[in-house]
Amino acid sequence: MAAPRSNREFVEACIAAGDAVRIKQEVDWENEAGAIVRRACELAAPAPFMEKIKDYPGFSYFGAPLSTYRRMAIALGLDPATRLPEIGKEYLKRTNGEVIAPVVIDRKDAPCKENVLRGADVDLCRLPVPLVHDGDGGRYVGTWHAVVTRHPVRGDVNWGMYRQMMFDSRTMSGAVFPFSDLGKALNDYYLPRGESCPFATAIGLSPLAAMAACAPSPIPEPELVGMLAGEPARLVKCETNDLEVPADAEIILEGEICPDYKVEEGPFGEYTGYRTSPRDFRVTFRVNCITYRNNATMTISNMGVPQDEGQLLRSFSLGLELEKLLKSQGIPVTGVYMHPRSTHHMMIVGVKPTYSGVAQQIGQLAFGSKLGPWFHMVMVVDDQTDIYNWDEVYHAFCTRCHPENGIHIYRNSPGTPLYPFATPQERKYSIGSKVVFDCLWPTDWDKINDVPTLVSFKNVYPQHIQDKVLANWAAYGYPPVK
Amino acid sequence: MNQWEVFVNDVKELAEDRELELTLRTLNPGIHKFTYQRVKCQLSSDLAKHVDQLQVRLGRGQLSPSRFSIRVLGEVQRLPAKYL
Image 1 (tube, each protein chain N blue to C red):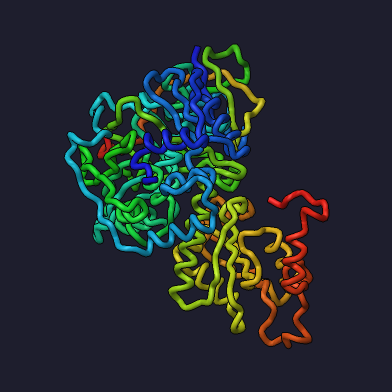
Image 2 (cartoon, each protein chain N blue to C red; image 1 turned 90 degrees about the vertical axis):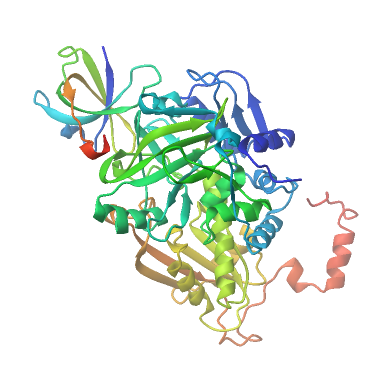
């Protein structure tokens, strides 16, 4: 099965697999569509494809596009039933392979150019921008999208998923953290010069393009899409600037970021499951051109309590990128996993505990890396603990993590204003705190006399007894174990 | 009659019967609902004093029970000329 090349192919593949539903009755863009997506997220239900939107004939919504591992497998062209560890292995294999550069196609072949609005015709209200949550600071244009920019000096391209609220017909405001690629470019280059920064927002991306925009990979996103898909991403040049955007995207907004002019943004329901960051003056995006496909579909991510695609995909990619980083440093890791229900705040690292201090070394590398601001807890368990099995991890944490010696705190590190536990001062200045939970037996303990023996079915019984019990389980009168 | 909404951290920010500069969003039905304007305006807790009505939300989106009537005196242009 090939990876879907566009959002449209992805919708069809999800419907065929029973992982999306067509909603034919009219849906209101004010709260109703958001509520459907939210409930689908909380139930891990099929993604809603809403074909009829109040006030916006011809447009549709696709919500919760990647909020389950089944849909992630479909996005990668895998069997929907593929288990998470195998999906992870596939991601690592593809992203450790040869770089596949994108191709730039002629605008006449680019579906995203089927409709072009310029000048006085530019009005964001012509698009079905949803009010995602009641009480949000505005209608959010960008919830599952890519903001495309190019570094003014280095020239490297960045696709980032920076949320964007519609402020007025031509203006959006968004949260751009100072430690992000775009935040650094704005603060280091554009703001001191008083120059505007060209941008394009692409909405209704292929699922792999969205995955790339969401992933904290050092590989430039257009190349990363190609590596994930196994074929070059198709890009097309913008109408009003030199940026290139995914040609098969549903909607493209072009314009400029005004680094010295900020307008109000938020509050917004966030990936932590709360509205945490206050309404504030944030980065301003002025739109000067809109292009879109015929019968365009707007993608909606509804962030809130677990689990939505932001939590799922960020957890997935942060974990795997950290695994790559730790292995590149020679750390004897056996796996890294972030449970989406941690709202990508807790990294679980499996390691062969062959030397003392390895848990702290992992924490220092993780928190000191570019990935670090996105999570604040690292839990290190041994290679006998199944990192995907929360029962085992929780048991290890509660029984092996010494309350004094096993908890290591790092103060005054980069954080995000979205941390619900952070003080107002910490939120304002993106200050974080981090913690490592060392759930390894100390290496200086005598392995025979000091280290407790794990009392479990698979650990304390001889193999032939285990085999006998498993073989006779049904004969004993028990139902089969799933 | 126009319906407006404002976000504030504290309702005390909304002083009555003097000129204020606020960022309001329209609640009038239609495709432009929830878009913002920066305006000069006057408020009153007497809901009959002005024709237009204002409802209030607090910092995390909670709807406040406070209601005002409002008179919009004019729009304020904040956007620097170089971006116009």
